Length: 303
Image 1 (cartoon, helix red, strand yellow):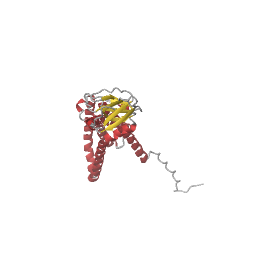
Image 2 (cartoon, helix red, strand yellow; image 1 turned 120 degrees about the vertical axis):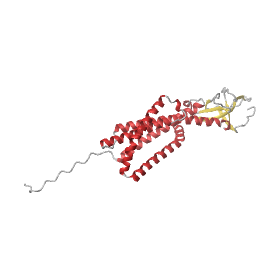
Image 3 (spheres, rainbow, N blue to C red; image 1 turned 30 degrees about the vertical axis):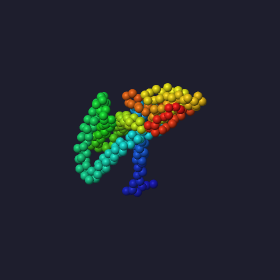
Image 4 (cartoon, rainbow, N blue to C red; image 1 turned 180 degrees about the vertical axis):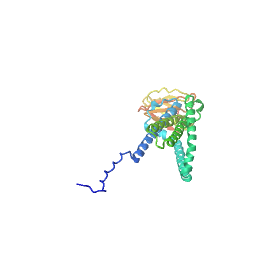
C-alpha cells in the first residue's frame, strides 16, 4: 500500500504521567502525624504532672497504678487553655497573612516576603542560640516554664521559612526536600516536648499546692481496720476498740483522703504541712472500712 502524499500517520498517544500521591493522601498523612504528636504530648503532659503532683506529697506515682485514662485526663485538663491560646494565635496569623496577601496584591506581597525572610532567619537563629544556652543552664528561667521550648520550636520554624524562601528564590523551586521537612518536624517536636515537660511540671506543683491548701476543708476520714496499721503522725489518733468481738478492732482519726487509685488509698493528716507532713499509702482490702464526716467533726472517744 502507498500512503497519500501530504498525509502523516497519527502520532502514538502520549504516555500518561506516573502516578503521584494525591493531595487527599498527603492531607491524611499530615493529619495522622499531627494527631499522633498531639496524643503523645497530652500523655507526656499528664505523666509529668502526675509525677510532680504526687511528688509534692512525697508519694511515688508508680505506687498508685494510674491508668492511661487518668493520665490523659490530667493532660487535657492542664493543656486545654495553652492549646486554645496557641490555636487562636496560629489562626490569627494565618488569617492576617491571607488578608495581607489579598489586600496588597502579588507584587507588594512578594516584596514584603523578600524583606521578612532575612529578618525571620536572623530571629530564628537568635532563638535557637539562646534556647540552646538555656538548655545548658536552665536555672535562671525556672520562672518561665515552657518558654524556652516554645522559643526553640519557633526558632526552627522561622529558620526553615527563611531558608525555604531563599532557596526558592535562587532555584525557582518552592518545594522543600523530604529531609528538610522531616528534620524540621523532628526539631519542632523536640521543642514542644521540652515546653510541655517544663510547663506540666509547674502545673503539677501548682495543683498540688492548691490541694494542700484545702486539706482542712476536706471531709474528715475515719479509718477502721481489723489489724493495727501503726499510723503515727502528728494529729492522727489510734484507738483500740473495747469490744473483742468487733470486726474492726482499730480506729484511726485525724485523716483526710487525698484520693484512691490502683487499689490504694492515699491519706494525709488533717494538719498536713509541706515541710513536715507525711502521707500514708494503704492497700484497699476487705479488712478496712471508711467513714466520712464534716471537715471539723470530733469523733467519739470510743468505738
